[in-house]
Amino acid sequence: MDDAGLVERYLEHVRVEKRLADRTCTLYALDLQKLQENAAKSGVPLLQVQNAHVRRWVAQMNAGGRSGRGIALILSGWRGFYTWLGREGRVKSNPVQDVRAPKAPKPLPKALSVDDAVQFAEFAEEEGDPWLEARDAAIVELLYGCGLRVGELVGLDVQASGTAKGWVDLQAGEAHVLGKGSKRRSVPVGRKAIAALREWLDVRDAAHAWTETALFVGRHGRRLSAQAVWQRLKQRSLKAGMATPVHPHMLRHSFASHVLQSSGDLRAVQELLGHANIGTTQVYTRLDFQHLAKAYDAAHPRAKRK
Image 1 (cartoon, rainbow, N blue to C red):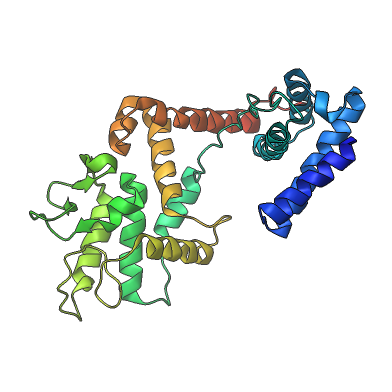
Image 2: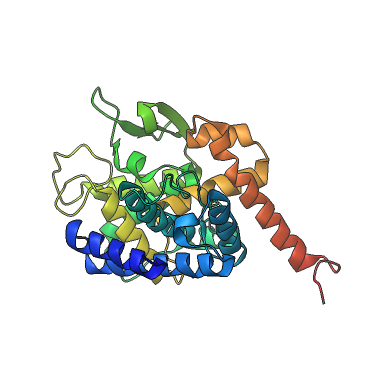
């Protein structure tokens, strides 16, 4: 049986015996077409493909600009094909078995510039609902001013208690939160965030007798969910004229990046964010360098290439 016949038999197998979806079968067919093209260029039948061939083809795809994820999906299709050939007794070993796609570079977290962050924090919707405006402004100030995770934010109660996951001590200017791994930490709360929280607390119970202990509640008096915070921030950022929708973790990234830019103290940022490993925090040094590089390109007369 020639290469085309083997591929057709395999596609029939996944379509009829494994009952895979039509879309999946189509993707498999495209992956195997790529395999046949590579094998033909190398002058080798599919049954004689070796591990070295596959590694060379992976390197060529990578050099051609295909993403690591895209290569991984192709390799998965090839691996399944050779696994089937092995069960059919046509190959002794799977040439794709130990081949892995190149690791995709980890994307940098998205952070706002200092100017954009301040613009967003100071935005006020004049014609909006004053109750919602006070609540959402306090949420933004806490997320950006303290670097909280959204789960830590919605877990805050109005006051400390035996059952509270977290709370804000306005007198001491501290937020006490329960982070990942059930680890508690305390972070300073800035003047702007304290003012916003006081304004929110003044109106929070003005027209309602809540039984909910949560610091941030919705219209029905129940604790605000993380998803609701995401939606409110997105809406608020669009109204504020931001270039990109803002989400809670973007404000956390902005907090970390801006503190690091000003202080250069990576250990302090690690403590403020509640990272167990400083390696997790080091990504912000890349953001900091990116900021410096942009400033250099914009300001130095020798920076720009003609």
